[in-house]
Image (tube, rainbow, N blue to C red; front, side, top):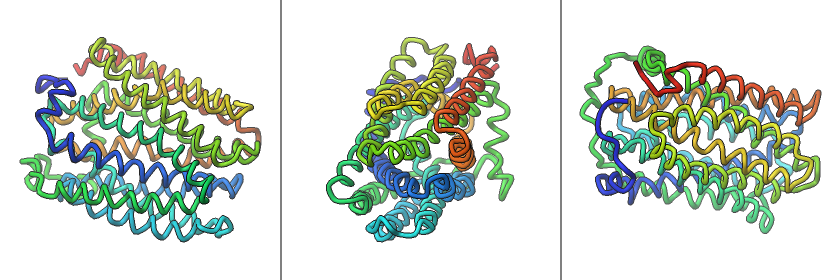
Length: 416
């Protein structure tokens, strides 16, 4: 990676106080709303049994369909503006979703409809939120800021499902959504505070004059030219597919079938989030101690994560499911932090005008396969078992990681 000297987290916070004081807590609370939403969706979808994958796919498909457009809008209209509009829409949908889940007997198609609406909003919202740091942080601080943001997200992923499980145990699943809607007002205000943030010099005068589909697909073309990133992005996509299928399809099915209940499902998901938090913190150490090999180490962690995909799917007891999910999260933590940080810092240094669109491609790749993954996992589990489906998905993760490590560019983090 070329460009500005890499900054430490302390230097980044000093250079970008608005990022540290406003954006970071705002994005964390935004992630908490999403974590509570996913908790309630996973639990409601599990009522559909083997058709749960269809409900989950109803949310993932529109997220995929809109994500490239969301990245393009962030680059063209201003990331903070798009974040405000979509956050407001997310709160409105949360209020409607609360009315649906108040009754545990609501028709399952209403869950699918809510999932579709939230997914469509997320497709536009997530690239915009992720592009805001480029407006606030010096290029040299983007790797550190990406890792710090992921730590805050991991903390939320640890607290969110456990909080959802506790609230559901006390007051029912509907109360979880009400809490999510109320919390959503805070990040809405936070993004509004950033509304006067200066847009990049290239915004409105984009270095690439592509429009329409050419603009949307320009992120793919940029990634395809980089010998490291074009190999690591598929690894991120596959590992996200496998772990998401375990969390959103396998664990809820296991919890209902084994009589563990929503609280155990919440704690298993929280165990995963806790592991992710620890793994993301470890990523700072990897970045500092092995800068030339951090990309390769992250890919190795992806392979190890795939092993725990298998063990989580085979877990016969609630305790083992929680521990295995935690270890799965521990090794997954460095993967996204290092690989995403590397990709976005490289993009910002080489061509800042592409930032939103390249991040949109990352989101697309890490979410595009999810609806297929949910459907395939649910169908495979129905005709075999959850364990066999998990073993198949885990093997795919190991395979893609091995293919990436076979390239010298990945092993040495060399763009040449």
